[in-house]
Image 1: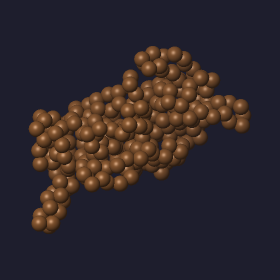
Image 2: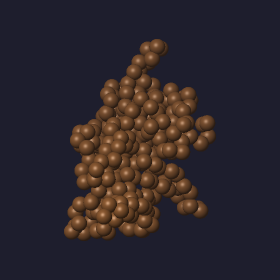
Image 3: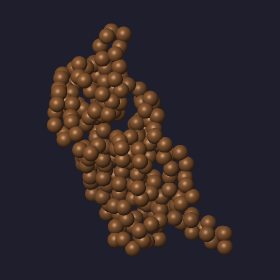
Image 4: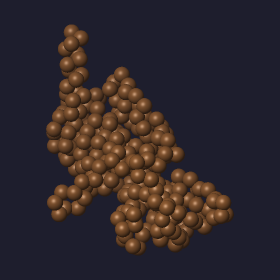
Length: 251
């Protein structure tokens, strides 16, 4: 009997190539969110792979809505759509011919509801700590002191470049309105974040839109820290939320 149970559980863990239509929702604040319809590349009861037009940070929580086969479900067996939360484990950029760049996403399922810390702060990033008895993954907040932890697996070892890149900053309130702005330069910058000189009064948790005229890009970011250097100039430490900073031409 135990061998039958183990074989059944092994089938539930094994990824199956099943191109089901899927809605992916990404929410990083009560006012900053986006969603995309895509198709799965593979799926199991406890994780899935798919591609998106936008990158999603490793450790970000996402909500997937899938017409999941009943035999792969852990709950909601009679519902038409299966709504399940996942933690992004990888985000790899790919190029398909002349089409726009896409990102291959791998997500580990964590269950029917996100942790309480996510509900109070959707910008929280997580790492997997262990697997629970029901097969879902248990989470712990990611170490935000590590710059590498916020980046996709294949680029996590890149460090920030100490380059003064001109940028514009716009502080946003909970309604998405701009409350303050300035033009400044970065102290350092990476694909996933930057330290910028500032005169703005933006505390950790504040959302800031970063614009670069040279690269023609606008990125929503969240303030992860604020400090004053030995030169007496304040800096904001920003985590980029909905895109990576294009480093081509400044490396």
